[in-house]
Length: 278
Image (cartoon, rainbow, N blue to C red; front, side, top):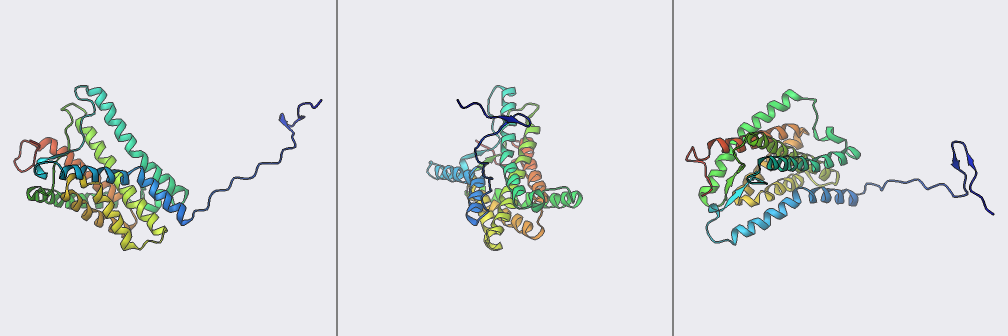
């Protein structure tokens, strides 16, 4: 009768089975790298672009002028139930950061991690100053372009917030603005441009790809939203290509959205030049 294997050392059985073959990582070919890019975009802004395109088709096929329709941002997730609404808002912000963590994780495995896109604290003063200057310049131009596009009939009426008037409204809007800035600039600017460079895409084509993606997922706002964000994407992508730092862009984007979200709450209905839903 064959008995159990003889235990030696720390109780590990001795068997005649051959040792397991070492697991080797798949080489990072162009095909693998391209698949990685598509998957990261597929769980983030390429998916957003697809939904935005479908929504825009819905806008065009609906009776009435484009500007009479409303693009609502930061809407209530549980009307009449503020604590449940708050929990859902925070969950939305938290899950919105996951694609950023995925992109940074993949860059850390191959590509240099956060430092390769300038998402670090090596230059806090210059990064903050540059971000604030960008926000001041682009924010004003962006508002003017939106008003021009709205009056021309090319843009929907954008309502940056329809959250209930409760104590957590402004903090949630600030968190939402920061999540937007972090996700868009890390993925659409930093990660995408680094990976396109590694894939051998020319700087000009990479810049155009990043900007077109940014414009496309804002198409739900209308042609004005598409064109304005396309222009912003061209500028931000070019700055990243020159400086290699995404943190000033994150700061600028977060400030722009914070002013837009909170400013809308404070001013809508009180000043005549801000379009409001009817």
